[in-house]
Amino acid sequence: MAMMPLIGCSPTAVVLWTNVPDIVPAVELFNASQDEHVVELVYRADLASALRLAETGPDLVIGTSISNQATARVMQPLDRFMRRELDEEDFYADLLASGAADGRQYLLPVSYNLPLIYFAGGPGDPRGPIIIEPQEMRARAESFNEIRNDTWIRLAYSPAWNPAFLYQFLRTKGFRAMEAESGAPTWRLEALLAGVSAAREWISGHGGLEADRTFQERYLYDPQIELVRRGRVAYGYETSDRFLSLSDARRAGLSFRWLGNENEIRALERVVYAGIPAGARSRRGAERFLADLFTVARQAQIMESALRKRASVFGVAGGFSSLWRVTERHVPRYYPQLEGMIPPAAWLRFPPAQPRHWKTIVTEVVEPWLMREVAEAPQTRDLESSVRTWLMQQED
Image (cartoon, rainbow, N blue to C red):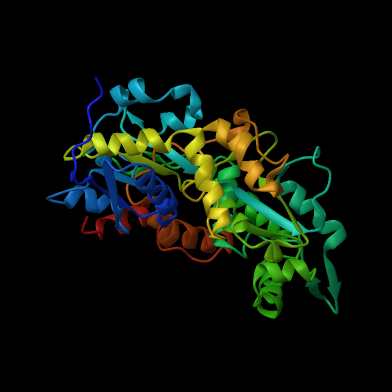
């Protein structure tokens, strides 16, 4: 016999910590769909540190920069929950593996993003290539670049213009940060040197660093997207979430391709993960939310709701879904500009678990170091020493 619900029972609170505001639509839809649990959202900018230092933690976490050994130690394994509620074959396999440690699943990937290059022109042939390689960008310079009075007035692109692009350029050359057993970042020196050398060669191809700097000072004071529209430069770099969340008017007259190599695109390191801390007091409610979130129907509803409200949010939790069926079959329904542009799973290369603080290290240490190195400016330390010094200065 079915039991009648008790009158006057209050829903169980599920405290969710996040550093990803784009998870809000999923929370709102879940809370509206049932009355047994209510998810209470709390923003934590440094989510990983907050988890490690909290005396009383949350019931659920969803965010970036938490796929490291230190965070895994304060999380509950999700293996039994997965066997009961989810099908691991629904996920991109390599992306799911990045949330595991010591053979156990501690984090579930929610969403990811890709690096893209945009340019002026129509959408082109939907059966055409969806990847643009750096060498193709360099080759375009032969017909695009224009010089007047010994000074460039049009340049296709340069890796010295944008530190974020320079970092992604190195990743196409094989640079990959991993977490050593000590928890510190590590990488192959050969890949770092190869990427820096290739960037210097690119710059020398249009007259060297001095010519590049002169062009920057004269013309690159306007937003990159406007420079592309006016034909001052051929290309602009952006991330998929930022570019695809722009209004149709802002993207009018622009096309894009994914930055990568032949049949290979390296997803950005900013992967959104979900997990349940070891001290969760409402594990049942947290599991109920995750079981709801990782369904095709709910994720389609999240995208539909955001578009109906004209929210500046792309996809699911600000990115492509970790569920390959959602990304391949449903994302193009809500974002027609992605029709024919979804890469096959075999082309995607997902980042491994990221070292602690890596996102901030990239912004504050790695990218500035690379810009100086490409410009052949004097460096007081190599990259490894620079990162080690920065880490020693952190309180956490």
